[in-house]
Length: 639
Image (cartoon, rainbow, N blue to C red; front, side, top):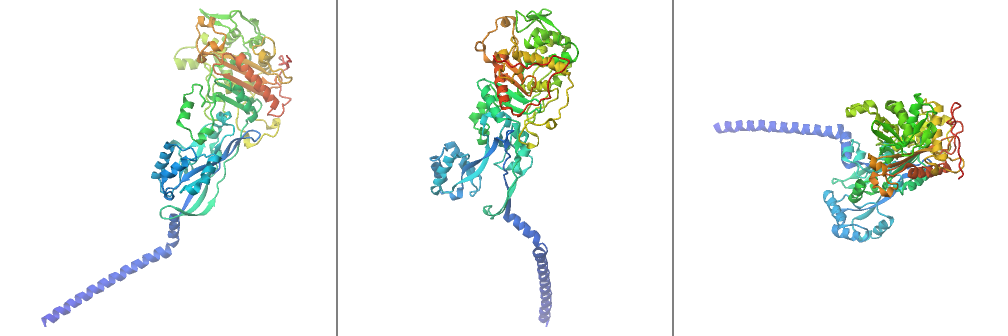
């Protein structure tokens, strides 16, 4: 009886437990069903999207970089079809043997092969690894013919930046290269391994406009990341075309004209528009070497060359201007009323200040008595010593700054340097001592603390012949090609300098005499073709202080002086006389003499410029003359 009761009680307990277990299972199955309903029905769209995101990759497509052309549409920077050979490790039977076979078809050194093997070890076996880039057509053809015997090897096609004129345009255009770590901004386009950005010149200044907009490709991938197929492709927008102010034919001529010099620069401006028609700096470098990938040997040669091939001397070189600064000194004196064009100085070959003699370049004979016209024509130092003494350094500095010295001109290219125009306050703040009278004499002839860039010299002359605050430019506004001469309504609205026309005429008349009157310092380099005569100003700028004995026994030929100790040769010029349209600045580093060496280059370049006439016509009614001053005459020498 007791046993039956015990069994009945145990049965009831087991029944309750079974019920509880069954109930728990029902609850769990219900929760699972509800969760499955939530995931598969209510959240179906969300998880379908997530699944597609795991299956579909979106890859950026490189846009075509915008072209750069000259003022007439001649390509200066373009994109060239590029071939490269790649290898996929998982498809290659024996990678080392395959690389050795490739080396029999195209140049591929042992170091190149080791680099490929390193890249293969770092990447997935299905990812293509570049064996060699920038293949020539012949190299590409040899690989393509032998592809059946080269497992895993194929040819890929892309594009690379190409500069048709090589070193003729390197300092204008600059170059493109891979993005460095410090240049990453979060833009995914910059992280693509094949993407290139502008590093110098117009390529850098206009990089954003030239880049374009990336496209994208939607590709299906498997669990290992291998591409299965391309689902969709949207091509990007190419970069904008940049139209420069350069006349490529004139640029070629100018570069060839300075090629014989160790280190030189020449720039030509359209004085009315500020357009830079030619900007030559030598020695130069080939921009294509940066696109193809620079070797350590080439980079070392570029960076250790004492002639500075990487520097654009037109905007980065800062030099004492020598006597080419005298027109600015003359304008300061005329505008302040300190002198008139008739002001005369007697040059005996030197000017004394205490126990120091400041010599004229024509020492010991001197120039005799000269007025302003004669002072500029003969580049008389004693004349400008006295003018500078009377006008003072601060008035000279104010005029120099008005004419474009002492600060960047604002040209649309990076890394322009400002030069230096000293003042009495600057001297006190910099050196803690007051200005000395001898320093005034030095700046009167463009020496001492004064330093300028060759572009600033050309800008000064453009402002003198137009009486406007001309700003040089390298790109045409709106990207419009040059199709004819602009009407005056289309010219840039440069502010007037407010200088008296009679004073400008007096200075330009003196510069006319430099080239076109017998006895002028550059008479031997005049332009003799009718209607093309140029006016100019020579300069010979000392690069080191010379003792009295050195000055007395200075060598007469450049081959008698070490290159680094020779004076800089400088010359500035405008043409045609009477209706100036083009201005030119030439500087030869350690070129010895402005009249003898720089002036002939300016003559040839301005003559070529006028023959080509990049402006296509010369306006008739913007003459630099005034009824109250002697007009600068046209002088068309035939001899």
